[in-house]
Length: 68
Image (tube, rainbow, N blue to C red; front, side, top):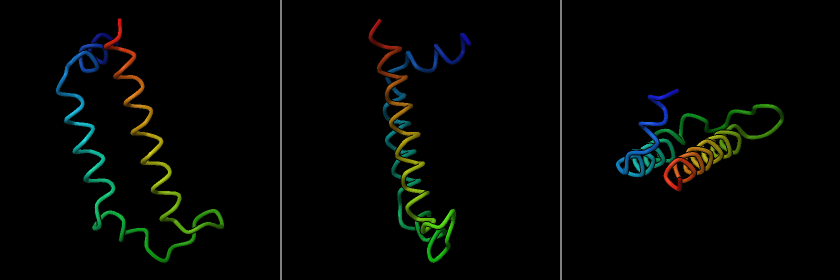
């Protein structure tokens, strides 16, 4: 758990999150889920929601780790 704390305490983690979000929400990745139905919904909505939720969770953990 110490290595996770060390990662979250680095300022460069914001840059990593930015590039991770940029890559995962970029056109080539979004086109992979085009015209696929997953759980009765278009897979693109499931994919975007999941990526967005993961990025928000990582930002919360990073901000919480740096506030103390």
